[in-house]
Image (tube, rainbow, N blue to C red; front, side, top):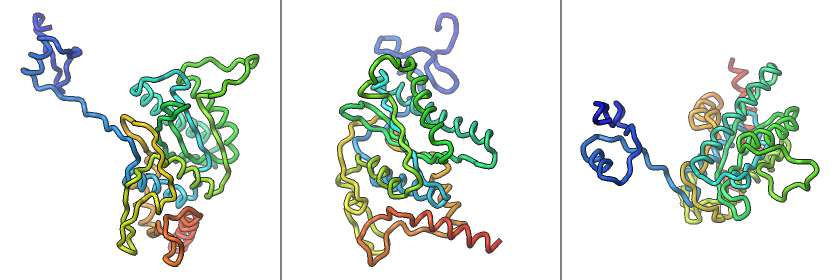
Length: 288
């Protein structure tokens, strides 16, 4: 490339050829301003900040009138993929596929929008290996169709053949989907299960008491090691993120995430956010 008069680095500072440890690579790195790729975060636990962000995402969905009633687990390693970078790509593609599925269903039933709010977490398990959990809302009349779609979509992503009905079912499947109806207790139970990689020593300040507590004590989560994850460990869709919560609270008022002062100390795991959203919507309509 030098001989032909070509630059070894593009306008953005990215090397045009893979860099190794040889003499020419060392010289290139010494002479050229090369943009370094951003290091990916590595985590062993769910931090206090991540936990509260996910908790508020579920609360936001409830205030929008949506209960996260569907739990999906995808084990990438059971499906034969072990490279973390490839798994990260498959994870993102599966999220995008779920949104595309919702968009297609919405076109079929224009009077029933499907917002598809999702929270997710990645874990490394003893039996499932590196896998992803997704908690989302699926309308009741689409839940059977969605569960069937998930199994097919995961097989396509992993490039797996359809199961042979003549063979006994495998003990471990690459995907599993449960739908538990519009029960907020089940939603919060699954949420706490997904947060089990919580930092055992994480603390949180409770606003109305100005006292600091161990997060595991007020969250009702029993921390359990879930392996080391490269890249983001938890996440949610934008429609239940901080910006969506801020817009919602601007319209219907701020929700108190802590239980009543005369009750047992801890976060709310009930229908409070659902009722807060319904009442706020009613008051908003009256003002209009």
